[in-house]
Image (tube, rainbow, N blue to C red):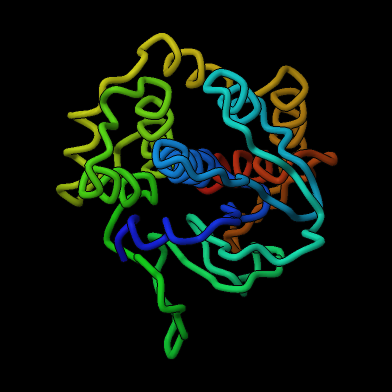
Length: 241
């Protein structure tokens, strides 16, 4: 799939998965910036049961002025729905109507999974942001001249590859090295992963941790919080010897 193939559509909606992460937001933003450069308007949206609450993601949207909309559904089916960092029909993607579907993703394909005519899936890439970066370059879009977008793409890769520790594909390394980013913005985002309330919730979960060494399992009781905090607590518990 080439990005030029979607320029023939008038009404375009770009959908991130529910509760989107930095990679999904950056990827959707990249596609929207490309369409904008070609005189095409589009909506960048996500759906699901809740809005984004994680501080670093809200800061990312604010800092880079990303017009990301939260909605429960669409009244009319757009000419084209493009799902980024996800695929329609998956458990973390709320169903939205469409007349035609396109997919840009980097997650593994399931057996016998049917794909729409327009798709670009590279399961060997560390982030969907890298897929969009490469597609933008091939379409002649000067990513390096857009500092906001460059920084957003870098942060998407950073977060989806465990702070760049799990990079293996050459294109992931190329994007990391070639993007011209705002170092101050990246530093601020790195230090905005948790709010004071979230670190308190995490600390209380660790303090009440129950470990069964004989059967090798642990239970942490976590107060109501953003689902990402469950991931923070789980990752910490899984790292215990």
